[in-house]
Length: 544
Image 1 (cartoon, rainbow, N blue to C red):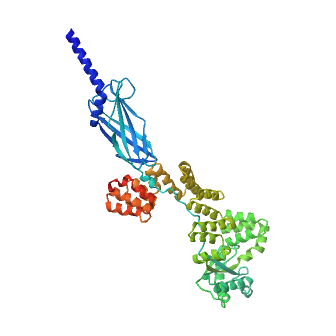
Image 2: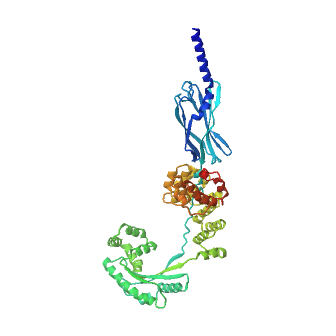
């Protein structure tokens, strides 16, 4: 009996010795624990670092009465950030932590950190403390991942803006016109018509065109008509005869007045268009009724019948309107050469007041300095109450990074698609991404869609961004392709700016092209900020 008691006593002491030594033992055996991180190189997505850490505890490692606290920590330049601890327990511990049995187990935990500047050069480590009763032991710190990749932050967040079209015409289409009138059912041209004021004005216009070096006569139309009363087939024949006699009359009218370009002769059987124009411009009491009849019926015969049924009205029409439609028109088609770019630049310096709204808007696109652009848009806005000028002024302010001035300029603008896009750009620059998205959605333009892609990138939605930029090229489109695993567009960027060079360097690094990395990083040195970034960027770790 004493022997049995002695043996039991030794056993208890042995268990106590093992139990008391278990934290140290787990610490010593920590090298047998396998730790992996996915991704192995951390990545910042949407302002966060997310990763899966997988720990495999071997058999007989985890003491059944031990508690293990594991703290994931991001260590970076400027400090460190620890996550909330993960707690594990042996299978004989009476607590509510995750159990790791003595036969071993594989545990995967998600880690999450908010990005702060400096984490471009960092690493993730696990710090563990094992305890059993009142004994504690620190496990060796395990580095599990490097990082973090912040390539998405290279997205250009300036926002894309469209200027409103200036509407300026380099060539202005003009016409000069004269006409001769015929008597009812006649195609004969009366001599009095060749001497009418209308013909004299036309001849004077031809002479002025010839003398004006900015004007070019590119062709003339002779169009003969019949008034829309009577049978349509007879009117067709009559208008054809009138076109023939009008062509002969045109030769007499222009005998001493040079006419260049082709002369096109045509006829219109019934001049309903001219009829409506004359009625609309007249003082006829029931003109709205007549115009309504014209809109209700398209058949010429029905139109004529319905109008003739209004007997009192038709008498007025027969006296005041129809005679003016028995005519032939001589139409000189003119191209007016507007101010050239060089002339516009000269005029804004020497005689700016001769410029109209569209000329001022065009001139603003020609000058180089934003300050001068702003002055020209201000003048157009003040002088012509131009919405286009007011909006374009806001764009100039945004190009100058004067967001406050841009807002005040937009306050005076029409709230159209361009306005919504510009307001979205301001919100984007101010970090109000949800508000920016609402403005861009309201705009609904292709430009706004491209701006929405920027927000997708910032939120980590790279595939959505790619869909919005489908078919587009340029810096942001190349970056989005890179973020989705396609390096080619970034590698092919033609721009020689440091930003494009940086993106080409990233593409080259991912392709293993060391010489292209070196060449492009040399170009990046032109931008101090980007050069400093490159020195820490995990993308270039193997090329340093």
